[in-house]
Length: 377
Image 1 (cartoon, rainbow, N blue to C red):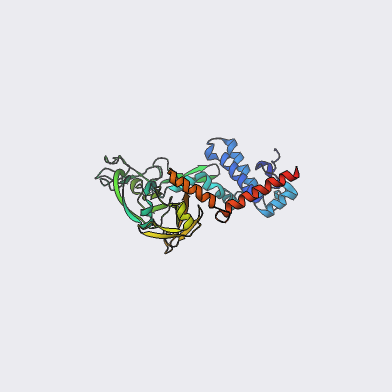
Image 2 (cartoon, helix red, strand yellow):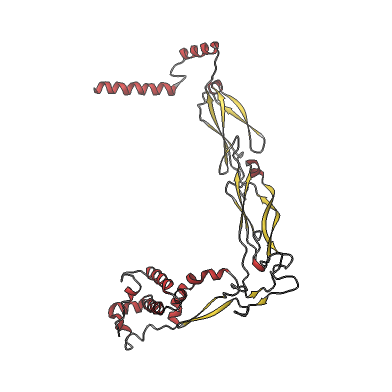
């Protein structure tokens, strides 16, 4: 009789492996060597048993400690209270990987009532519509329950019959080695029913494609990328299964005047050099189609921002409102007449550091910089 392999070698892990690492290694190997994935392969079945035996010992803290100290002898001749066995412990081990092996079967309920697919619809709205909200009508092609057969898939006047393979349960039991597995019925694909005379309108699917008009409520304050879910408005399920959902993805059209930042709005307004120097005021439009007055103090520099409270966007599902920020841009005059050029030249001669303190300060620093370099050389 050949000596047993080290349990750690069997699971292809180091002796210092953590519990999480041990479980991960077990799942990977168990899925690889599972008899259902290797039908008729006795070597795979033996390897699968060996993997389960090793994991059954090492996943238990007390058994692992005994194994680390005495090796396989800890479970021989009754020294460790009996061998690891394949009773309730094995069932626990196997349940760890059952979902990984057969998780897809769980997506179909008893009787094979498959849920319909979710649908996506892309919708563009304007910033003004996002401000006030709207109710939109959309038309989409979608699978709906077949009226001719009421979703059964069977021709009018007939009924589906119970599957002869699974007796209508949708699942069958399969003996594999030393245990029994319950699997989706391969004959009816888990539906539990067979259709001998399919409905001609839907070819037995229980659903047909139709154009459907839906009303979508868009609340005030929605942002670019907002997703609206319409439960049950997706594709109809196969043969009477529940419908999926419809998701509306919103995108905002670029606005001519405003840029949005969350609930705040920003706009840039050009002003003349004279207005910036002497001061003045101007009006700007607001998102609710009103007007707001902005007062410009004398000596305003290009890029200065003015805040208008409460003139931004509403915050979704709240009573809060953002602000509006107006950034002024001082515009340099172009296409000057000779007289205008002469007046500006005269103004330049009369200007001093007091009228242009930032420029005066900069050139003073430049002068000091070059003076320091000359002294150093």
